Length: 175
Image (cartoon, rainbow, N blue to C red; front, side):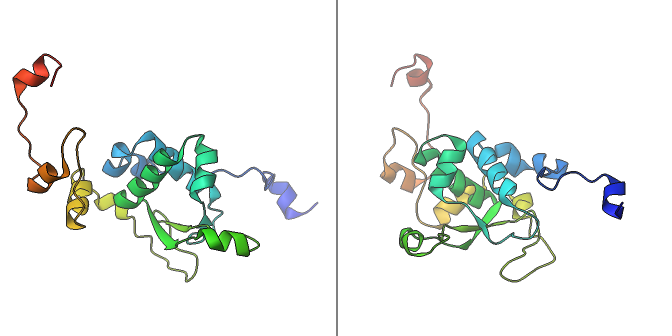
């Protein structure tokens, strides 16, 4: 009997992934939408311990995995990147998928863990731990694309983020 059988290890097909308490208790995780959380779990499920930086997940694969349309998936990817949970290692292309035998969808890095590919780094960046609730708006304004609230024009959003709310208008539920 070999030493491995004595230890009664589980079948290698029974993989699992771990969600650390400090990740779940971070402000970024608490602010994440349901789609962002599910997408992060899908990305983490594809991490095998040696492929951080080469985790492949296209938008179409994410749509199928989350059983939703393309709009929430695109917003979830954007939200995870904005909050610092994931980074793009290599941008995919539609044309690559047709020509390459294995496909070339976007490759992702989980910032929670050390990068394995293309070059190994021993220290995870954990960028989501520095995220604060107002960071998304600051990033959007820094890039020159202000957030536009429903019912407001982009000109009003360019003037400033603070809008005066008329209590009479909203008290009766009409505009």
